[in-house]
Amino acid sequence: MKAKELLDNYNLYITEGRVNILDIFLKSNVGLSEKDIQDRLSKKSDRATIYRTLKVFKETGIVHPVSAEGSATKYVLKKEPQEHLHFKCTKCRNISCLADIQISGYELPQGYKKIESNFLIIGICNECNN
Amino acid sequence: MKAKELLDNYNLYITEGRVNILDIFLKSNVGLSEKDIQDRLSKKSDRATIYRTLKVFKETGIVHPVSAEGSATKYVLKKEPQEHLHFKCTKCRNISCLADIQISGYELPQGYKKIESNFLIIGICNECNN
DNA sequence: TTTACATTTGCAACAATGTCGCAATTATAT
DNA sequence: ATATAATTGCGACATTGTTGCAAATGTAAA
Image 1 (cartoon, chains in turn brown, orange, purple, cyan):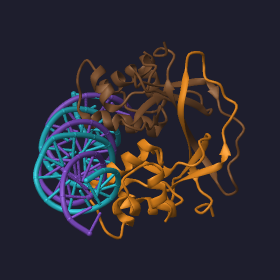
Image 2 (cartoon, helix red, strand yellow):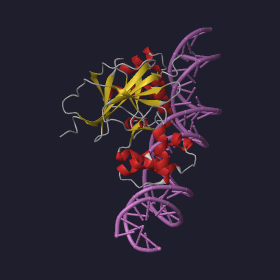
Image 3 (cartoon, rainbow over the protein chains, first blue to last red):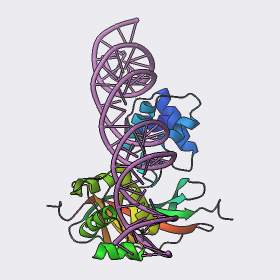
Image 4 (cartoon, rainbow over the protein chains, first blue to last red):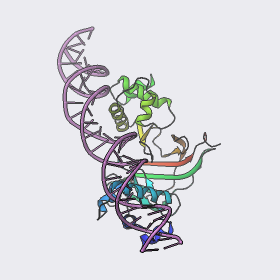
């Protein structure tokens, strides 16, 4: 039910495709690209549709993009609005949210205005580290 | 002379193309993509060559990539090894280094190991802000 | 400075990703 | 149940990433 509610909250048409994709996000704890989603969809859908769904989700703020060097843009469900870290593992290549880690104490130079941020740490994640 | 010295220091073949590209980086204070470089090259060169040059520069550590949502990967000369911010302006679309701003005071969860980081702030830069 | 060898370049191709118009299909509000 | 608004699937094409290979160029050694 969660997915439908969410779509409704964001005033989006509730379609089978969107529900399925949102369900995948709700179950995943790593960032997903268009292809990642296609792979996890039991009922395949069109590339352009996934692309546009992701675009809509991004524009409404359901997810946010985490651009990662070396692969297609990944998206994660937007959690708290606070600034937090994303972690990309060089072994398993997953990108995840380190939502509990916050960044603080920096100030932009005169004249700069922040709209949003994207902090990415690249390294070995706890699961691959051993 | 700077460019040749640099290439030499990194033990790379000193070719006209590499010197020209490195010169462009040395003169630029914003991140550059393959296309950005092509545009600034007085003597055009092959896309694949620029691509591979960028790859070599990245591998040797002369530059580092700053992946930016919505455009091709941009590269900036690698400065100090310290962690610092990159700023992407939504108006002029330039990406630049805020080398004097450092990030500190965060700790990764147990088991995570950092290799490198990529901190990007998106907003309006000082030149577009008025 | 010429030769022999190592590397890089340009070209051609192709894969992956991003993007859009349009007609057919599906959701919503009435 | 219908009219209307929005989404989907398809086809196409643009951009970016990537590689093999032969020709051209850089380097080191003679």
